[in-house]
Each structure stands twice: as C-alpha cells, then as structure tokens.
Image (cartoon, rainbow, N blue to C red; front, top):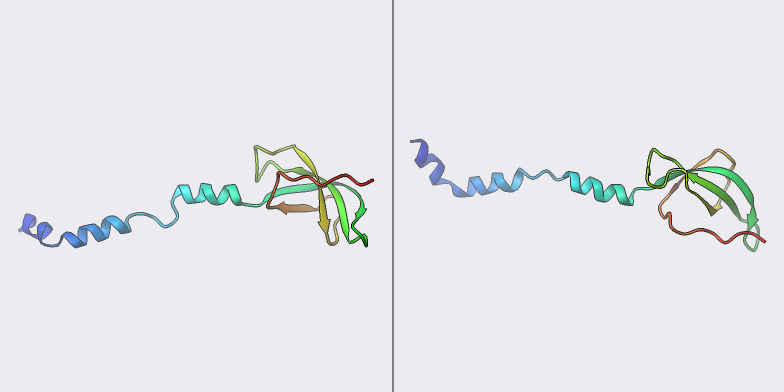
Length: 102
C-alpha cells in the first residue's frame, strides 16, 4: 500500500520539490542589500551651486548601520531641495563625488 501510493503520482513529488524553494532566499536578500540605499549624515553645508543656486553642496559621512564597509568615509555631494546639518540622506550611488565649489 505505501510503496504503490508514492509510485502512482510522480508529478506530486516534483510539484513539492519545485515549491519547497522559498521565493525570498538568503541570496536574494544579499542582492537587494547591495542595491539598498546607503545612509549618510550631513556633516557640513558647504554652499549653493548651480546656475540659479538651486543645488546645495554638502559633506556627508556614511553611517555604520547600513554600510559597515563605508562607515566613517565622507564625500561631497550635491543635493537639491532643503537640507541642513544633521539630516540623513539615502544615497543610491556611493562612488561619485561632486566637484568642489570655487
């Protein structure tokens, strides 16, 4: 009885094997984490730039919580919109640095 029951429906076994894989495996979290925004705190507002002064140049320092590999590193970035010291930015791209004001 037991052996004929398992042998009679091989499709059921393959369906279970395909479904046993979780849609959010640990590897997918690692991939999402590498694309996740990195948090950086505004240390200093350096000044306004752009043709009409609509962009503010700031120095930011990366926070340890979201990116331990970047923690403590600082960059100069251009920010559009209201900003002040102590604000936290979510940066999607961390390699580029803005050119300094003259």
